[in-house]
Structure formats: C-alpha cells, structure tokens
Image (tube, rainbow, N blue to C red):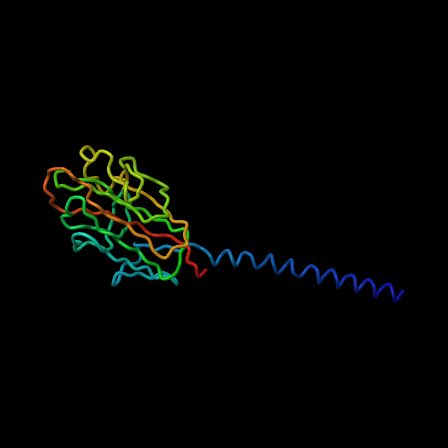
Length: 223
C-alpha cells in the first residue's frame, strides 16, 4: 500500500510540473500586446516648440525647405474648424507662392515608427489669386481616403489637387471635400509633404496658400 501512495504522489507532481509553463505563457501575451499600443500627437493638447514635439518616448521634428517663404502662421498649431474637423491642426502656409514652385516639409522621428496615419486638410484653390494647391508625399504611403473634389495620386508627378479648381474654388473650413488621409506601414524615421502652387495660368499671384495637418498616430519601435 505504501508503494502505491508514493507512485500517486509522483504522478501528481509530474502533472503540476507540466502545467506550469502553460499558465506562464498565457499570462505573458497580454502584457506584450499592451506595450505596443499606438500613440497620438494630438494638437488639441500639444504644440510645436522649436519645431519639435515629444509624446512618450518619441520626438517629432518638422523642418521647411524650398522656394519662397512661410507666413507667421506656418508651422503653428491653429484652431479649427478646417477640412470639416473642429479640432486644432498644424498649419502649413506659403506666402504669395510663385507659380509651379514648392516647399518641402520634412517630419523626422527620433526612433523608427510604424502604422503612421494622418490627414491633410483643405486642398483647394483660388484662381483669382493665382494659386492651386498641390500636395505630394514621399514614397511608401497609401491613400486611405481622398476627398470628392480631388484628383491625383499624391506623387511628385501627380500631386493631389482640385479636379475643378475654377468651379470648386476656396473651400470653407467646414468643407471636408479637399481632405486626404494617408498611412505609412513603416518602419520609417521620416517622411515629407511637398506643397506646390500648381497654377500655370495668367493671373498674378496674390495672397497665401495654406493646408492643415491633422493629429498623427503611430506605433514607436521602443514598444
């Protein structure tokens, strides 16, 4: 009888030993998933300081280069509505942009990011003032939503722009038809938005052209 009891205890102990790894593995999985949650640069709660903003472990910097000059509103956080969205946004604004000229805005991250998503608001035109917005992005993006008044594919050769600029004209802040939403699967450490005056007509250029950049959502590599 003693031998039988010893065998039973050993069998029970072996059952416990085999079951422990299963329990540990199951409890570890949710912790890994939670650490990779997306973060958002939310313009309602933050702004650029010296051309940079930090959220969590990631700092994003924005620099402007190219033809012409920016306005006092360029690379500032402004109040909506713009593009039909009643939230704050990052303004990109060119002063009296010469015909067919561009400015390039480079967004750089302090670490690689993935699943980057954002929108550009208010791609429109004012023919009488001699400008038509043209917006293109560095390679690797996909357009997930394109406004009803827009044409183009968002590349340098085919920028997003109003399909009928003379008819559509300058959209109001409550109008979402000139918006485009793009995403980058990544990982990447930078991307560019090239902002062009694609107008080639005879009207003289006057006034400024401006677009907005929405909140940016991404997953940092440090997760």
